[in-house]
Amino acid sequence: MLRYKLDETSGTVAHDSSGNGRDGTVNGTADWKGADGLRFNGSNTYVKVPDNIMAGLSSITVDFDVWIDPTMGKPYAFYGFGNTNGSNGNGYLFTTGNSFRTSISMTDYTAKQDTIPSNTSYQLARGMWKHVTYTQTGNTGVLYENGVEKARKTNVTITPGAIGGGTTTADYVGRSLYANDLYFKGRMRDFRVYNRALSSAEVQSVANETEEHWEQAQELASYNGALDVFQDSTVGPVIIFPSDYTGDIDNLSVPTDWTDAYGNVPTSWPAFTTAKSPLFTVEQIATVEDAVTAQVQPNGDLTYRLDITYDGTQDRVVARTNAPASVTDPLATQYVGRLVIESDTTPSGKCRPDQTSVANSLATIATPAGGTGDVTTELQWKQVQALADYNCALTAFDDPNIGPVIIFPSDYTGDINNLQKPPGWTDQYGQVPADWPAPTTAKSPQFTVAQIQDIQTSAVNQIAGASSDTTNYSVTVHYDGPSDRVVVETDAPASVTGPLLTTYPNKVVIATPSTPPLADN
Image (cartoon, rainbow, N blue to C red):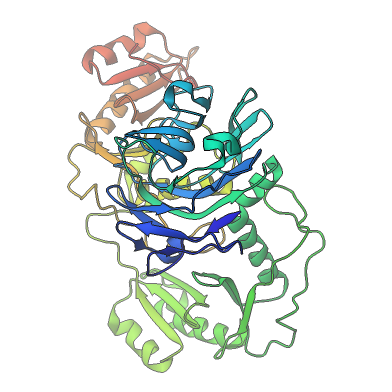
């Protein structure tokens, strides 16, 4: 029925690309971010959708990408379609992330019917992109997160078209129908309304459309011998071929036995933008790469780091190295217009996973409590872990109320509100992400790295010292962010571990191996 890509760069019109002419009007501050969507400032930004959007509908799907600002308060709504009476909603359909649910009512909150997860306090994670879908047909409403069903209600008695008798004049994106609720704060993109309920397979396909297309672009690039594939914010994936490529770049060969990340064989392949490099054949790229390697790392000398790639966005060979200008300047002169030298110097006060002892002693992999069953969540949690590692954090974890959290040592001197992104970090397809999550950050109230390592040493010595020829107790130690405790996992008895609890009161948790600690023992 309508599709607002919200990828404009100026103006106050949210253009409807569905072909139905239902353009929306941006009220308040229109802060466009192009492919990254429309930014809603939480105070006056919202999109007015044409009146009567649900008239005549017995079924509906509302579907969109959303990035919730970590400072978003509550209550709020991602969208609200319906009417108002004074300061209250008066018949409406809306979805919110806090708690995550979709509500439909013929009057106000006293008569609402909620499609909500069994864990009614579940909240949509903040600081990372999420894909939200609500479908309703017959008596069934289903709520999805990233294409995965989160809630189902099988006794919905209100149809969307019944609200207001088909007349709805308060149809909003980014604003609630209740005057006292907060305006949405964050970003949205690709907002869609359908006049039917998408199937679960369709919901998953829409939710992962960008990722599936990217997978297909990667496969076509590899299968057809391309130099590179990259994401253009305007036209999507672009595949670049060598200048002497003899195949038909407008009619690429499609692999017949390829399946996507979910094991599905595509029913169709998009027509990606293709081009030839104006400068390079494969051999010419290899020549530049060999020359750079010989200059920066002669005879295998690893004094300086070096990473060389062809970058299709620039049509240049890019060399990232910490070698000084005296080493790299001759290369820049020799290959002017063909080679870009980028600094690989680690920012002061920061660290990388291979340069910190923290990771060796304390690392735990950041994952959401609900798992990573979709590619969007998996990628963004890898980014959370990368931010934690690069900025020397103690740990990263998922808080069920606010999403990703990164905890730093108590004596951390960096700016925890302005984390450095690891230079050169790429996703599984070798691409630098356009978006990074914005986790909640905090310092441990109790621990520096040295203090944790002191407990680690004491625990190992205590438990190893109690081992004998006939009994060898196991022991592993890690820092647990949610409880701000050091967890000692061991099969040693309380008579052995008791002194640790005495020496480190309210700082140590004893747990049996592979059993998550719940409280101090």
